[in-house]
Structure formats: structure tokens, C-alpha cells
Image (cartoon, rainbow, N blue to C red; front, side, top):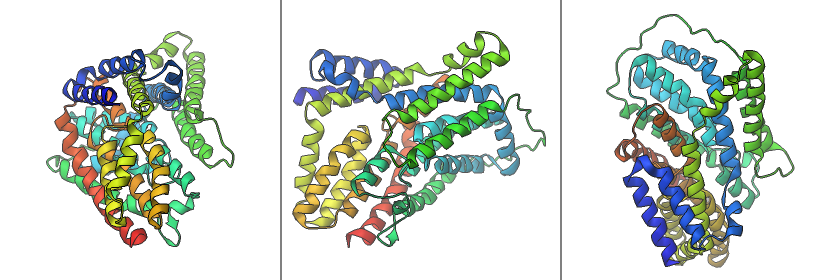
Length: 424
């Protein structure tokens, strides 16, 4: 277990230090986990989340078709025409991303909204880095608002046998939806403050960009609709369903684009837009997490947490929330939440208390903790990948300046309200 912890910690230090080489560092570390046997060959495929990889790849290709149609420019024109200045444009985009993310995967949300933000920044000749970071962290926050917003929310709903409406009202009390929305309002204030110097008026040209093709827009809307429908189906679907939806729609888009343009570039162009460095980084992270899970690190961590708060429900709740924030800042929250759910069930039984506050605390802490670092959530990694393709360098300081205040403004009210409603 000790070598796995050392390798894992060293990898994250290197990724934070040498941000330009994160994909290569992560893949190298994942290879070491495999070569040393800490991740057996038979566990490689189960460790890789093909649903996320397919969804990112498919949506990136769809988004390129969307960009080529000039629809992001049209949407940017519409937003610029309605808001008074750059500051409010940033706030509106952040809230818009949050609303979408309550129903659609966080990564897909970032891929859909980022092109609009990039186009606004290009038109106004302003730095897109804080725009994209705000969109990414807002997407992560709202993923916990509904049963279908994030994988961790789906896992929690399964553990508590919750329906979609239970996330809004649970046992006659306001549910996770209201905890998240309270945090979203306060977080919007953080975005407003971050852009406090961007008071320049947005020029109103009165002209709207002409969209060349509406089919890519309908394909993106179709992706959103199908992802929502898939979440409500009463029977269990394959784990890769969301990824297959996105890649399937990309294939349809490529076929349509080829039929329309009649040249190979119609297919090659969108495929080139797929950020394979971001996909490589995620593959490396999945292998690393699979390795430390296989070596028992996550299990040991969960058991250690359960011992620290024995005897005091409030102390146990506090430890779960803030440890989840800290751990999820560096570790993918899906394996962590999957491990902690049965641990929390055992803690609640042993202490003779209702498990609701502990479960909700786990979800809020694990979901929001990813906003603390550039590599704490797939949406953050995707957003930074988009900026890298635009030629923008994102330093750790750039991310911390928005991510940490955003996290605290969202988690503190949720931490207090969950305990008042379900813990007391």
C-alpha cells in the first residue's frame, strides 16, 4: 500500500508543478502501476471509465460541428446584446452552464457552453481563462442538484432509493436541490466579484451572425434530450450509454457533414478537434485510481475516517464533509463515493442514527471538492484542455483564485443547512 500512496502523491505533485505535461505524467504513472503489478492486467479495462471517454470524445466532435456552423457566434451576439458589460456576461454564462449541468453530465456541459464563452472573449478581446474556469466549476456544483446531474448523485440516489423528486424534497424537507441552489447563488457572487474590474460596456452592433447550418445545433440539443431521457428510463442501461449517445450522434453528424460538403475534410476536421491530450490525461488518472483502489488505499482511507468520528454524530458528519472536500480535490470522486456509501451505512447502523445527513454531506463534499484544483474534476480538465487549444496557459494560481472561493461559498451553506434539516 505504501508504494502506491507514494507513487500517487508524487504524480499529483508533478502534475501540479508541470501543468503543460500533465497527460504524459499521468499516463507514465498509470503505466508504472500496471508494470509493477499494483494494477493487474485483468483490472485495466474495469479501471477505465469508457462512458466518460466516449462522451468527451463524441461531444468534442459534435461541438466542432457546432462551432463550424457559426451558432456559437450567433449565441455570443445574443448574449452581448442583452447584458450591459463583460462582468454580467461572465455571471450569465456561469449560471447558464449550471442550469444545463443539473440535467446533463458536467463535461458535456463545459464542451457545449465553452465555445460561446470563447467567441464572446474573442469578440471583446478579453482573457477567456477566468470565463472557462467559472463555467467548469459552476458545472461541477450543479451536478449534485438533481438525481440525473452527476454519477455521484445517481449513486447516492440508489443508496437511499431516491426518486428524481426526492432530490427536491426529501421526507418533507428541502432536498439537495435547494442546498445546491443556495450555494449557486452565493457562488454567482464570487464570479461577479472576480470580474469586478470588467465594467467595460459591450458594444451593441445590432447585427447577428448568420448561421450556416442548424443541424449541428439540433444534434447537440438531441444529445441533451437523450441524456435526460436515458436517466429516466425505468430499466437499467449499459454503463456506457451516455458515451454511446454522444459518439452515435457524432457519427450521424459526420455522415451528414460529408453528404453536405462531399470532401474528406468534412470528417477529418471534426475528428482533429478531439483533444486527445485530455483523453490521455483521463486514461492515466483512471489507471492510477484503479491502482490505489486495488492496493486497498481507498478502503483503508474510508475505514480510517469512520474511526475518527465514533461517538459524535456531528463530528462524524463534519469529518465526512470536509474530508470529502479535501480528498476529492485530488482523487476522482466516483470511486471514493462508491467506497464510502457502504461505510456510511455501517457507521449509521453502529451509531444508531439516521444516515441522511451523512449521505448528503458525502455528496456535497465529494462533488464540490473537485473545484479546489485544476485536476480535481473531469470538467476542470476539459475546460483547461479547451483553453490550451486556444493557446491560453492556465496557471495553478489562475484556477485557485476562482476555484477555492467558489468551493467555500458553495459548501459552507450546504454544510450548515444539511445538518440543521437532517442532522439535528
